Image (cartoon, rainbow, N blue to C red; front, side):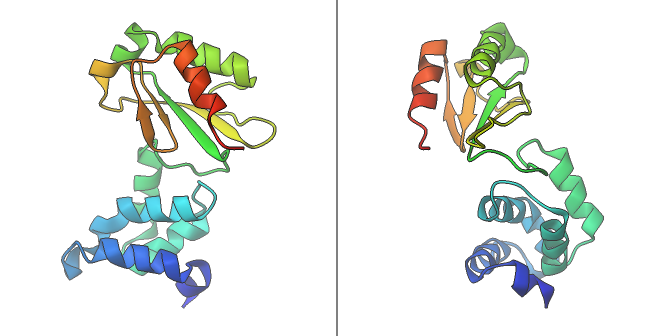
Length: 163
């Protein structure tokens, strides 16, 4: 099967972990964690080939996998940096300084939202609500959430990212 050529045994084990959480006739329920597994295992982004293989593996139409992957901002369909900085730009965060944070990161890294540094180290994205309105503005860095940000705090976060 093509899936075994694309998926490592570790990926298959992780997919099976998630599939075991759902009834056999509802394997498609594992599409969201399955996409996370694949994205994390393949350089931080999803290819059409990976999504096609996931569709075959869990038994759902390819288009349904594409719909999920393109609907949610947490999935990337093109190469990204080693580190992803996702700044919330929804209303609470914007009212509390997210615009300033985005501008600061853009100037510091010499990239705009949606771009990656020339060395491939960091990708900056703006994202919809991350559910941290009480801690606005917020930033997600490699799946870790930081709240009540200042430009000084953002600089410390970026300085502490591994190369």
